[in-house]
Image 1: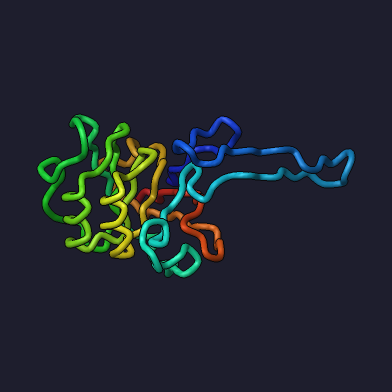
Image 2: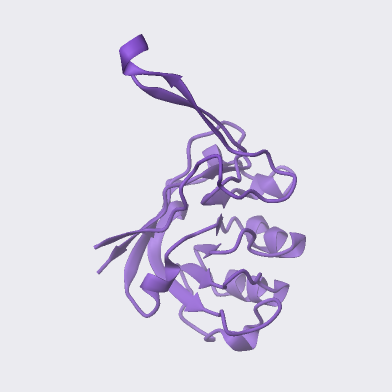
Length: 189
């Protein structure tokens, strides 16, 4: 079974404050032009997307420089919706993160810097969230300085709690990109 973890892109897609709005405009229609196509205008960090190190780290790798292996792996969903404030270390298990894509079902909560440091120390391959942001600037810097990609605005994570799955979400190959929209999916075993 494949679970779609991406939010749809449309003019109604919410964006982070001060980010460019999404615009999907009809460009060509079959009756007039012989083909159908839309023109898109959006920021790199729109909808379900990945942050590359360059997003917060001066001289960090851009999305086109990151190895493709960073965008696929065995996934794990942690349901932390019951807590308040930033997600703390005592809310998550203390093992099982090495080489895993760790996804947080938060209901809008952000990670604390302590959780980000722990995930880096434990060797997490990538980290993601259903929230619009994984956390504050410190959380981003901790993860991205370790070249741990950050996936944000994931959908349908509640369908994966307690399940074994492979996560996959490849970015567009944007030269010099600080991030990219992705089509995130989970292949449930």
